[in-house]
Image (cartoon, rainbow, N blue to C red; front, side, top):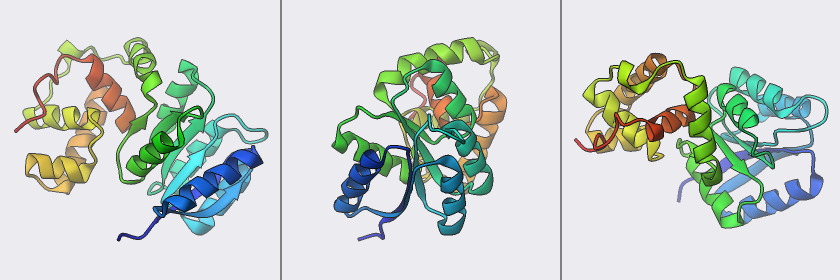
Length: 219
C-alpha cells in the first residue's frame, strides 16, 4: 500500500476542520499534518511541513482564501490546492482558477464524494464540483479571448486536451497515448500558452465547450 497523502486543512470553522480531519484520517489514504483557522497561519505552516495536498476555504477573516491561494502556489508549487467553499459564485470560481487552484468543490458534497475528489486531486487530476461545470463554461465564453475556430492545435495537443477534460493525470495521459510523462507536460504547457489559460481546470472547461476535441481522445 502506498504512503498516505499529507494533508493541510485551512478553514475558519473549527467543527468543520475537526470533521474533515476525522474523515480523511479514517480513510487511511491521508495523514493530516496541520489544521489552522486562517490564511496567514496556513501559509506559515505549509512552508514548514510542505504538504502534498491542501484544502482551503475561500472566505475567511484576515487574509482571505484567494490571497492565501496565490501565496501558496508561489511558495509551494508542488503542493496541490483544492478550494472547499460554500460559494457557487462564478466570480469566485474564476478567480480561484486564475490563482492556480487545482480543484474547486462545494461544502455540501457527501463525504464519499469529497474523499473521491480530494484523492483524485492529490493524484494529479483536476477536480471541479459537478454543479459548477456549466457555470465555468459560461465564464470561459465571456473571459477567453480565443475562439475555438481560431486556435490551431496539433493532433497530440487535441488528444491531450480531451484526456485532461476527462480528469486524466499526466501519468495516465502518457500511458493512454504511449508517450512519456515529460512529453505530456510539454503539451500541457503549449495548450495553456495557446489558449491563454492558467490551469488544467480552465483547460477542461475550454475543452467541454469546444467542438475541437470531439473524438480526439483515442490514438
